[in-house]
Image (cartoon, rainbow, N blue to C red):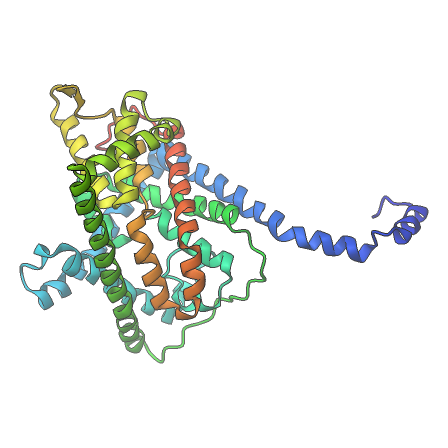
Length: 396
């Protein structure tokens, strides 16, 4: 407008496309174009984190140390679980090991809100428990970002389980950190912001520290119940599908899904950087993760890792027994997320218990968020395949 002459300004004013109409049309487009800032910054942050962690010794050592500390911190919940459920509580791993960590984590978050630490820390939405007070007030696009972040990362409650399988703790933690900005970028591509955000970082409402801790533990009760109930229902449906297809085809559904998904996901695994001879195996792992859960996929990956560490023949009866280190690392990053059909029930049930007023929006956007979370995990695997020093032993 500064470069326009006075005559041109008059002509523009007389044009049927008046200034008010032009501004109105521009504002209608701004919400979508404004999302490009989040998209490009998210992708850039993901690549920078990958370079820092996977290409520098300092970054690798820091994340390796953090992985050990997080695992140690979460294990403190075992004290309460052992007292309540007895010495053999580990025999019921999910109910008496994983769910108590959710209670413990919720209590810690409530205390941190009370002292004001979380209000200082939170700049963007990331985890439902971390941003619990804000969920009822966020926009649809922000809610979609929350769900996408949940699908593209793993919870601290299951980090220890994957580490116990033999998967690298530093790679798991790095994958979650790298997927966080990628999830924001993918979320804004799938659901651009068209509303005006109204959330502000408010201080905690608890009267004292003990009340904050007690309220945090009590608030986790419906969350734990919803997680357990939805997991039971989805696994029951999968068991029914297993039985039905086994009766019809006289085959195990796991084998059917493995072969189908291996062929479907094989091109994606190859594009991530997986060696061609390993892409079929990694495609099968992605199928396990998508149609069942990441527990099954990581358990299978751990067997492949152990087979490689033991040595021996790479092929037995024409079946490959293990993969290269490069393929193992890329698979670790690609599988590191909750984006699977079974987790749809967990996300819908968990978020609905925290924000009942958003039930319709949560149910309507969950599937789209799962796809966006899957793409974010694949992007993380691509970055890992690009910048990782594959000469470094996987055990490091």
